[in-house]
Length: 371
Image (cartoon, rainbow, N blue to C red; front, top):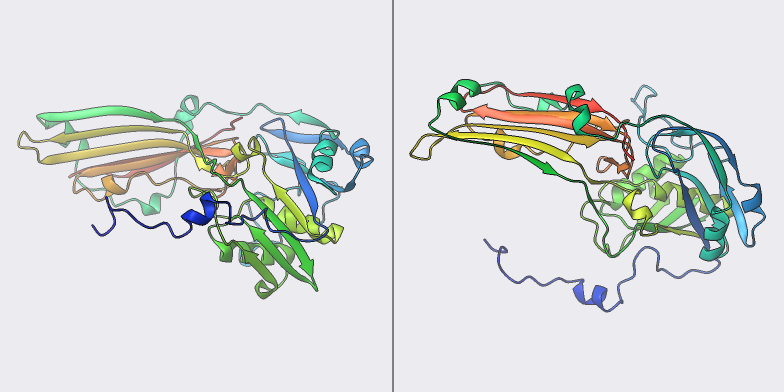
């Protein structure tokens, strides 16, 4: 109990509240250009056309990147067999979540980049997304079953025969990370080496990710994150924008800065998923627990396998049954987060945990698409 309930000194607190702390998008450098994202207006489908001709003629525009002209990045990870399901921005016309980045406009000023981005014309072949978690629960499948404890006991009998029991359902809505510092980065290249100021809670992961993406040595990537203006876990994994900023800086041969708008903060990284949970607990009259069952269905990415673990307490009980199931839905997510996925398509996962001091364990999941 060294810390709980006691005042703790926040070593960076004064710097942040007085404005002295520099965030990723606040480092001054000469000749910096600005990037602005264009996001998809559908949750699932394919881009059939994207016209940037008018935007390219707008004042101050340096270059506009789309899936049609962006250099191909993201080589297959060694040992992956060529299958890499992580989200790769601007590498395909396929839309897998609402608010997916489909273009990056780079211009001399932020205002010029934002204005030009509004001139981009896009058409889609839209498909119907699955967005209702509860309507899809019957299709949930097990996920991460290897992490569940071995079946033990007979939960059904223990619960049925108990003199005291409680059984309730709980619905927890999606909660978004929207901290004081929006996600963003400033990047530049010099002599084949990349320097990027990024809002990150894991600079080494960002370094390795960018080194792999651009096929350079990790020692040639310098990731700087002096302060993080709040993240709540949304910057633990790599988001999609660092690779776009680094790509833009390499191609226009100038430092480039890109920062999410407040609206983009709701779709540009991971979030706490939609959750349905059912908990059943039984006990003797003297208060001794005899069984506990915890079942949960949560959404997650349609293309990346990630599910929040809600069952640690139930799994450590002597008589418990746990199961988790997932439903994939098209909704912005992050990535193992994140990756619900960066706000990407998300999958709904259902896990239930029930161990009666006699119970089995199982897991299942579902796929759908959210807007």
